[in-house]
Length: 229
Image (cartoon, rainbow, N blue to C red; front, side, top):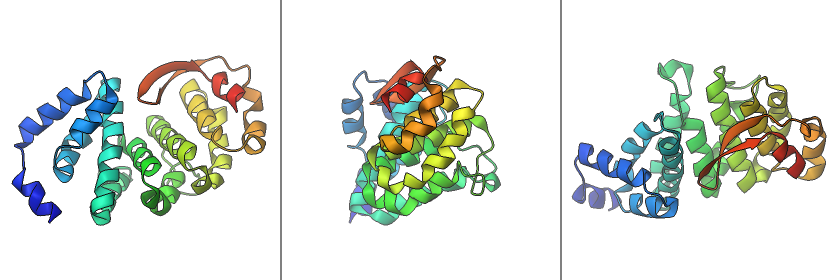
């Protein structure tokens, strides 16, 4: 039934992509997502995928938020359709895919933060991207995506990724402040007795990095998250 309804409302691909881009540029994220959710969910996935690769940080992160919301909505209607998208993210992050999965780990984390069933199924895979004995991502920019995705999930459902703290700790020693800061933010989702020992040495780390929080981009010091934890 859902598929037939989607077909009845099918929008030409080029027009849909233009409409989605306009919405991703909307000043209010809530309105942006509400309107994107009015499109046929399965059809709007491909335009959102393309915007995960955007060099415009605002567009890229809005696409992450919108993709998570669309996957959550799909999961409520048809879990298998949501799983297909999650598997597409996994394939994009696989060396054999032949591409680079920009935005995939971030969107996975967003979707799982919103949908508990998906989180129960795929949290372990997201953790594996920062495990040296797992599906470790070699590219630093992909590592940043995995750290953000894990942080987003950890702040929403810390019990599902509690075994990730020791692996996140490896990134607290990274050369660049972005990976240190994202790891600190993610570790800070765990109880103080877990997070505190890992983060103590970052209290004086005042290097700034960019982070997307609550629908907005911020430039913050690493020690902001060490002090909070």
